[in-house]
Structures are given as C-alpha cells and as structure tokens.
Image 1: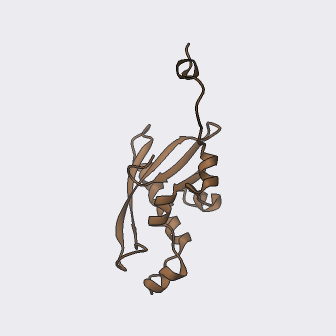
Image 2: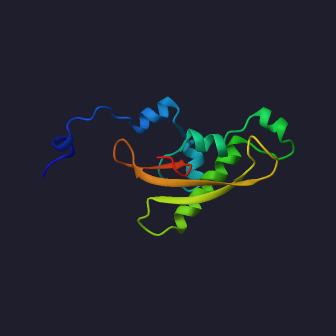
Image 3: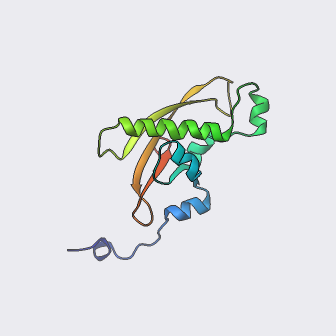
Length: 138
C-alpha cells in the first residue's frame, strides 16, 4: 500500500492542535467545566468563536449593565448547546451546526443568535477531541 508520504513527499510544515493552542488560535475549555456540560473529550474553541460567544470583560459589563454575563456562564452556554446538538445529530456525523443566544460584545444589549459548528475529530495523538468554531472555519 502506498502512503501519502510516498505519493507527495515529506510535509513542508505541520501545525498541530497543540501548536494551535500554544499560538492562541484555539482556546481550551477548562476540563472540569466541559465535563460538567457533558463532554468526555477535550474541548477547544477557535479564537473567533471564543471572541464572539464567550469573551466578556468588566468593560463589557459597563457597556451592557444588568445582564449578569460572565465568561464562565457564556462558555457553559456554548458547551451545553454544542452537547445538545451533538446528542440530537445522526450517528457518524462529525460536524454539527448549532446556535447559541448571546449578548454581542459590540452592539445592542439584547441577545442575538450566533451560529457555530461543533466538530469531532482526531487530536494530535489520534484520540477524539472537540473543536467549536464559526461556520466556514477549519
């Protein structure tokens, strides 16, 4: 059997999940919170998904007073909605779209829908990992 390396040669560069985490391209969800939300495997969000649906600061509290937002609470919502989406998906599907309501950091102080995709694939060692991203990201 011919391998990909036999066909195409040695890879020019490899960017692993660990590299993406170290570079800040992926933000890892705390393992205990992910497990509490139902996940058995490591979960990470792309920087764009984190920035749109999870990131929240004291400055955001000042811009949107009275909404009781926190990064932990927003992350919980994303993790749980992703988990529900996967649970209701057909077996064998690796990428599942879902939506979450969140107050945008920029813009009106009302909840709006954000579209995300939860993807299950192999991590650097081949074990399953979960990545939550915006549609069109890879």
